[in-house]
Image (cartoon, rainbow, N blue to C red; front, side, top):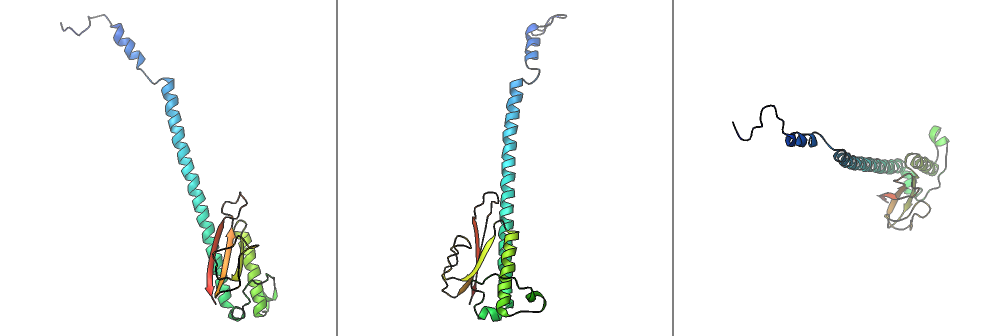
Length: 180
């Protein structure tokens, strides 16, 4: 008879006790596993949130670029007003006849500027913009202090908006220039 084998009919108490102690997970192990899983899921959720915010910021920037290019197209279509410098800090004015029977180049420049500013306000959160002659176009805080110096040979189209719509702070800026 082998030495390590228990006698027939007898059960070793030490081996059955160790099997009962290892027969499953303890509550502490389960809680620790859930905590690790929760931390991992919070990390994934945080990465998802940042991704959505980055996509929104990129979308708003592309909208600003599109609207700046829209206004350069309006300027190029109205060369008479452009050559007469009517697009330098124009007064926004709605002129209904520009849409139906026609109007002067100056009135069309004012109407273009009116429509463009309304478009900025509707598409971009807190969206504002100016068009002016500026030798240093990459400056200015918003449309109330655009830092247009009126000198130079570039017509600057400046756009500001709030990239984080809930904070109420204008924190994004885009500018495009057109040589005179």
